[in-house]
Image (cartoon, rainbow, N blue to C red; front, side):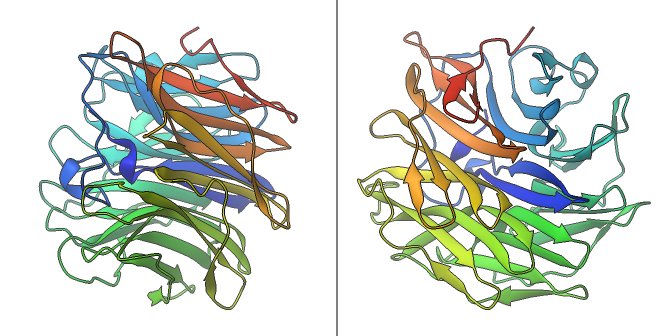
Length: 376
């Protein structure tokens, strides 16, 4: 079963089009914080962990389901979400998605063999792509694409080292990345251009981890922490001077007891923590972020203690909470994508019978509304 607690989102701007991708870490041993896995459900109907959109008529949502191989890929055609049957034969877990157009998209995760998994949409079908082998236990958490010829995928090797792959238009190749001992993991990646990208995650010591691609190499950047255990789950970038990273700080030894929201902003020079976030109550976690400009961004998550979804909006001055539906029991939002003034947020909830159900919310421009046509 997928676990949300390592999920994050990435957003890139490619050729003037806002592209969003969500990333996830699903293995319990690789989750960024201790004690954060949800209670297992006895009836896994499905859950969504990532979403990407290139226009109001083209979007992808990915996750897991009990039918077929357990993988779940949905496509928005401007009218309804439809399940893509051609992906059901792919074993493993799908955890990150990115798209640059209706003819080019990527999904990453882990194959059933425990090795990294990469799928590509060519405009007609999803096809598995050759990926470098890093042994059992390797997985990819996130993917970002600046164009059809430039993309990044990040995650962790089976030995607990950071993992960065680059698509050069022909093949995926591993690129050197800083490592800080076993247990370090990258959970999200964002690419503003082929020469400017960010990757975020955490170290085994519970410190935030931010890497920057300067066009030549990946280098660690100083990043703020909030308390002893701070974790970044997602990153978004619209330019070399504007980026966001989100996550949470775990103030207690027993998981989120309590957790605090964590939002960092890159101003072109340094990363700074956003103070005075609301809600400030215990238990809140951010799992995804999307940005379309320096004046517009979304961050999503939930409060596991109170069973509420959370959507925050950046208006260019401050982050403000926006009301969002919270169906069922323990609803979660794992990822968000925004384009042309609209947005999608995806996740899951539990029924009274403890069955997992997919959750899709649509920002109409004035309010978040649930989508009830996931499998049409």
